[in-house]
Image (cartoon, rainbow, N blue to C red):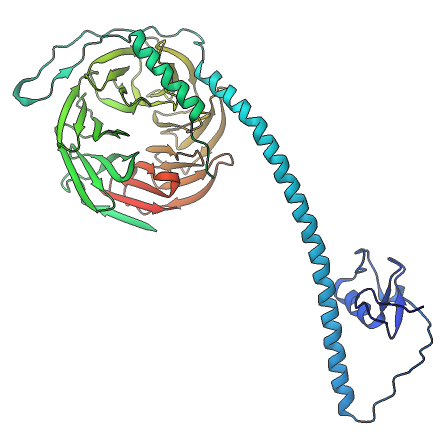
Length: 487
């Protein structure tokens, strides 16, 4: 019977056996392995040279002593090289076996994850439907009508409308139909730096807001402290239109997703509708009696939501310029600081000067939920594309994340002291949340950990927007610069 070394698979010259694994080894090889690792190579149990047991065998042919002094050196070098190759080969075989086991485990986990995703997809649809049908919790607010002001249209100025015509059953049905389409067909998640400046007047510095055209993200819309609205083409690096008409700074802008139309709001208490191709104002909506602080376009593309320091939010038809309804929370009696539609369009959120976030039912015009927790005026709110999360920022140097299914705060991101949050935005896939203010910070959703930080602006960052599939992030700031970051 011949003995074979478990490491080299060769007949050993000086065989020995390990009492730990009961395997036969070439003594020279096993001693080197023990010196480097201190364990048995077969089962990784502790092993020392003293534990090895020599095996007495008779060798029919004994190697003869070399007669030349140079030959032994060569043979010794060759033998050492052979030993090293055998040890390395053995280590590679072990690593291969370990990798195979890890791959098998990963494939098993992937299969299990696919099964879980298939089950959760059904629960997601049910949760979205439940969110879209939130019921009023306390009936805190009743619609309050404001007296109508007289329309004006002299001197070529577009007609200003503030008459409330009410939300007809046809409008409510249109909102419901759009929400149903968005709920069932919402897009699934698909899992450098460039600077432009000089868009607004240098005498009155500051870009206060921005938006990207949803159908062509090369087109950038900005509003500035110089009272102007500017449409800029990023690809051509030129200004398409400069729209003038506001009498005070422009604080909110929106680009229509399918028409060459943009919207702007200002502390001059007006909302203006502009034609980009014509370069002129086509509607002036006077929905408020004080500064307009927030603007959001409904998913149908036909209606505007606005908030104001006059404590009212308003819902207006952009085609006719008519104010369909205006509502306030008389019990609160506090100015509204921002407003944003939920992706499905049946509910929306508003921020207040007394640090409250209010969720409203658009069809019922009632306050259905309140989110307290901030300690300063709310400066920005943003809904995630899947409709589950609401991000809010305030003058308390923090960003809070709210679960709309459970109506509670599940995460608070504490920022640096005196950090000013000016803008919040989720990307279209719901993978990232960008925070703009004293600098730009990008967080990955679910883990809510910071993955990117940009501090290139020399002033406050007042506007953020993601490009298609989060390929780039655009920002605008008080330093009058527009920046694009490749992600």
